[in-house]
Image 1 (tube, helix red, strand yellow):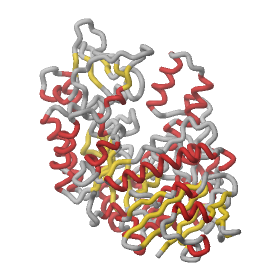
Image 2 (tube, rainbow, N blue to C red; image 1 turned 120 degrees about the vertical axis):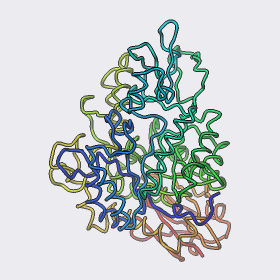
Image 3 (cartoon, rainbow, N blue to C red; image 1 turned 90 degrees about the vertical axis):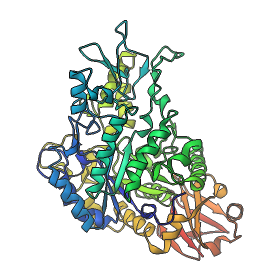
Length: 566
């Protein structure tokens, strides 16, 4: 496990999806100057770190996750000097910057790939995976993460490999010259003063070099996701860390799907490849028929408590409710009738004090929800368009597909940030690149900023409490102790260090619930009564007051409490 001196353990990270945060020049696309304009807001919110989505030069096939020049800022986001200014001014506000590091693949418009296409024998051709086949057919039956084959063909007959879009050819990490180029890029940016990186799709960098087809029961393509964290990846990641991150006071968080418990320590334990990896084990309730039911909450509780217990003994993780690749958390976790201040603040309380570093995604702090998409033409996501075409060909109907993307599509998290009730929610004076949600006049920063009873005000309290010096040791180094017997629909846990404890209790049901003395006695080792426990110190409560009745703590619908114990 990492030592006590790592600052990122006590940090709060705010993710900015640059295209959608703030437009400064009226072109409808968020930019770096827009982020600079909003630094006072972020300081007021209380966050420590900005995770900035890719701002590198790109043809924007996948909104910047297809990079054509790792050293330049794309003109749609501003100039190179705007990035320098953001790093400098954010530091003056006490805020660090981490960048999205996309090194599994680049853009097909990167100069490396262009040279490789022009000249099969050039050095850069070895930076990618090219294949020729005797029959001219694709080399295998693997399915890309975005749908369709992982192979696309060049006019000269060569096939090239892409885990994601055909516009995103995978980099060949087997090539030591390519790896040196990647390390050069990383060290260059760290030298400019950024604090570190969120490392994109890193578990895909090692391939099964046999590239053999895999038979499937249904005859469909074999999902490339099954090759995540492929044997041999350790050598690449150890070298990456040694040649880059270890040379700086660098904070890294990896998007590392496919990493199971058996490999967790290697990724983020003592001397792990990264400072932390994201915890993806419980963030989605996709497929839950009734998200408000006791059974659904109990399944969620088991995933959270089991995984937290494991992680707290083996490393560090990034914890989150939302990101740029998923539907909004209020849609994922709550039925429509249950979405409101209390349920949103309950979810926030639940995850914010878990073992790990909390991440807030732009708009989460004001309770933004999914958009309503009326046709596929309104969607901008590359993956959505590829999936739409593929599923239509498989016989699915358009109405069902549109319903799916209204629930789970990535564009739901990418609609413009809602700053006020003016034109385009204050995001832009021009035509926004993606439509603004209909409900922005009711849900926006300006409306909640001065309201002490708003979700935004609650998030400020959450952040201030988590960063409070009195809790610093508990949050940064304290153990995690689940309370699975707290009662059905109640998720409760303790965090403790050096004789200090906090107790987090969240009723995730849409009705009144109770924590009784018997449940508390089973869950709490100190043998404290309900009265003793709640006479100590309530640090946070999303309702006014508490009710203790006949040795029971009566929890109102979605009531959340944080209590300090001594």
